[in-house]
Amino acid sequence: MPKRKRDIDPEEAKKKVLEYCLRKGALAAGVADLDAINRIAPAGHRPNDMMPRVKSVISLGVGGQTQGAWTVPAKAMAFFGSTEGRAYTIAYGLSFFIERTFGERAIYTPPDIDPELGPRVPLQSLKLHAEMAGIGARSLAGDILLHPEYGYMYFASVFTELELPPDEPMRENPCPAPSCVSMYRSIGRTPCMKFCPIQCLSGAIDEDGNQAEMNYDMAACAEMTQQYETISSVMNEVMSAASAEERESLLHKPENKTLWYKMSVGSGGLLAQCFECMRVCPIATQAPLADPIRRLEAAEDAAEEAAE
Ligand code: SF4
Ligand code: SF4
Image (tube, rainbow, N blue to C red; front, side, top):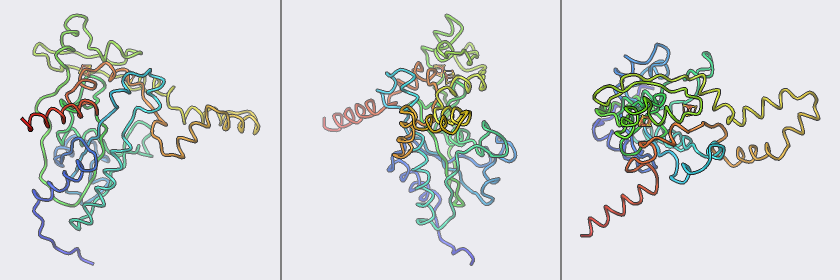
């Protein structure tokens, strides 16, 4: 059946799409330029490799940790630090919203790895989508995207055949922060480089205080963070059990039962990161709207100002 023609104003449609994202809890959302993504993403990982008639790539970001989370030790952070599930939920809902509102195809873009290319190659780079949509810029901490207002976010994308006008990448990169430039001038490293427990970050800052070089040892970071990838660690232990009895007792031992409980109630944090580079990052932890307390205070200030 041919698709019914609808008169859709792209600017108006974009407004509705972005409003949906913010209403559902995203802090930031934008539309990435498809041509720009195609110039950067390698063949096989471009949006139309997944959705042949894609016209627009929407990226949204949700807030990272609560302010409290940055105060806990790494071993605890590993269990509850991440909020990416919320980003994926909004993106999933957005794909349905677009189809039922505009009658154009949309998909929630899977954040998953490419099953043909191994564990560290994603099907699509959600990071590239967010960067091109102007809601994050690459940092010296392994290219983690940072936002000057919201700090550290988790991102999700939606592809659609709906035509939407694109945004531009951010003009200014908040990384390195002025205090990081000062530290670099004094000891040759920024906080993320200095406090990475296995020194897998290095780089350089130029005379103007901008990023000149960034090096990230992804394999070393993965090895470090794997110790917290608790589900994988449990399965590894279980599969190497010498007998059925031992396997059973490993699956049911109290520490592991916590994980099955967390899975059954849909808790995040079954896989984790080390987070030390972000814990010491002034943008991730101190950007004006980086956590719910700062956002509350900003809303209170705005309300007070409006009442004056
Ligand atoms: S996550 Fe940990 S190991 Fe990886 S770069 Fe950050 S501080 Fe280093
Ligand atoms: S600590 Fe944060 S702002 Fe500073 S250099 Fe590292 S990533 Fe950039």
